[in-house]
Amino acid sequence: QQKLGDLRRRNGNFDGALELFDKVLAKQPDSIDAKEGKALALLGKSEVKAAGDLLGEVLAKDNTRWRSLNAVGILFAVKGMPNEANSYFAEALKHTSNPATVLN
Image (cartoon, rainbow, N blue to C red; front, top):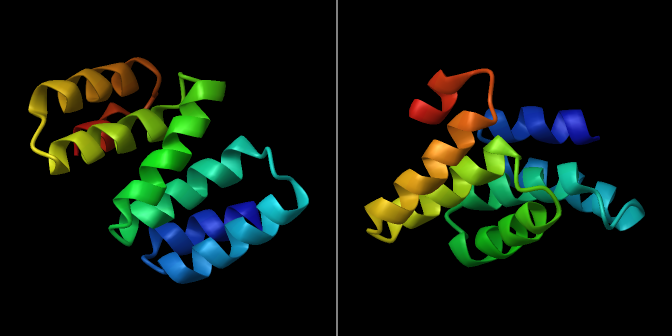
């Protein structure tokens, strides 16, 4: 369900992705992968408060997750806080093998 949720999220089916991530979290409430996926889907729906809360949980457990770092950078950019955004983007770049994804 995790991989299908990620696929749905990448295809823009955020509600479908959320449904799957919630199913994973019902069985595995501490799943950092499902929390990250759910946060990214929420961000895709512009639900920034809920996304930010989950991203905070993810990064509290593993502050090297580049997708979460990048997403927090996006949240700061949306809030008009470019310095904070750039620091998260820079940190995300340190932890990915695909820097083009972060740079986009």
